[in-house]
Image (cartoon, rainbow, N blue to C red):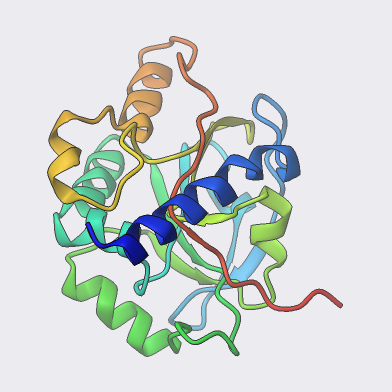
Length: 206
């Protein structure tokens, strides 16, 4: 791995490490409600999915950590698994419009389709309101909400905080694990983990 990449990875991990303190959504408490437009222009609310498990995934196609999980088909496979178990999967883009890696809705959905993504909807959060309410700091950053609207998992997609796809096969997929546990009537064994990835480029507050 090149020196510059090592620095970028270290910076991403350091940024994520500090995210827990800033997180506003609290595990085992009600998840923040939200309403947003998806990439097709449809209005989507968290309340629309009351009674179902909901996975939230923050994404940015330009992030090497996101690319790791999409190019390897790990993220689409995780999405397919969740939907097959009756869950809802909402992908969220909180990248500000003036950020260099912002993508217009048509391009974003085109990229997801090219990776065979299996999302229920892709939400546009260009003002960062949803991301900030959840304390999302990296891409990817994952959350699982139960049918009663309670947040039961927050953190990384898996246990290997690298951009190397070769690490996926030996990693614990925290999202799959959490969903399997709650569906089996068990508490989530690791309800909060340290998210890793690229920092979200939020719009300036105010």
